[in-house]
Amino acid sequence: MVALLTTLMKTTTPFHKEVRRLRIVMRMRKLFEGAVSEKEGRNRVQQFMRRRLHALYPDLSREERAVIEELGQKIMDKAGGAEEEEDNKKRVYRV
Image (cartoon, rainbow, N blue to C red):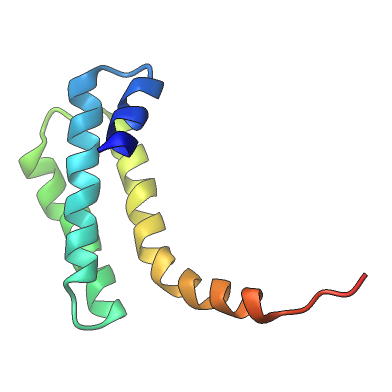
C-alpha cells in the first residue's frame, strides 16, 4: 500500500491515469504468471496488448499506450532475467 501511494505521489500525471496504468500492469502480470509456460504467458500478454487493451481503454493516448507496452515488455522479459540474476549472484569477480 505504501509503495502504491509513493508511486502515485511522485508522478506528474493525473491520479486517474496512474491508477488505470497500475490496473493494466497488474492484469498483464496476472496473465503472464497464470500461464502454464513462459511462452504461453508471453502470448497472453501480447494478445492483451494487441486486442483487449484498446477495447477496454479506448481513451488511452499514444504516450500512455507506449508506456504500457514498455511495461508489458518488461513483464515478459522479467521471467528470463530471474535466472540470469541468480547466476550473477553466484559469480565471483576478482579485481
